[in-house]
Length: 233
Ligand SMILES: [Mg+2]
Image 1 (cartoon, helix red, strand yellow):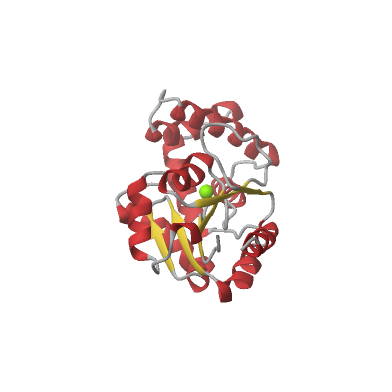
Image 2: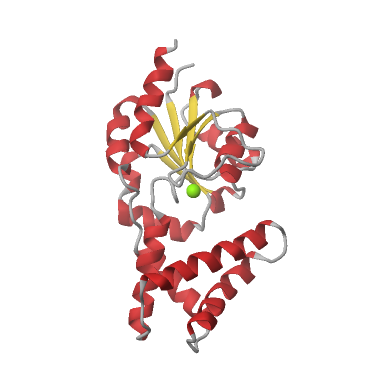
């Protein structure tokens, strides 16, 4: 097997979504004159994680997660404010404050001469285009695939079928997907017959049905994995 084509997830892989969220919440807190401390973000993270777990169990809708997370945070903090209005301001800031993952630009620069490289991202097209422009991500890759524009999301096979139809033709064995989500990226790669590398900086346990071929904890580990794999030939 020879990897010639790399598909990168964006959020949580090349972009540090948590760092963007910290900046964005802090910015809106300051603008509104609320007191911000690290404790605010810890509380938000705990509440947000709990709500998304309920979403994944089918107990609440995505919209309800987004309208409730700041209501619950403000209830804990004793702040009298409308969570949904805060959510809108927060999301605007998220668009304005994309942050590169540590080592991401160096990685893309190192790999660029030897590989076809693409972005495969689940997300709102307008948001992703803004963040692509702000980070210059498009300069490093051959094309970008956004779920909203495709009409299918990772891990659906329809998403990957669209990608395969639009990248430079190559055997599926030559494709490696790199992503942080077991349920979107790795499962999608499994289902569509390509290999995958799980980017797992938090060193989470492997659970569920997804089965990555490789696992890395820092982006700087990726070139060695690819090199090793190429030398097997
Ligand atoms: Mg991701």
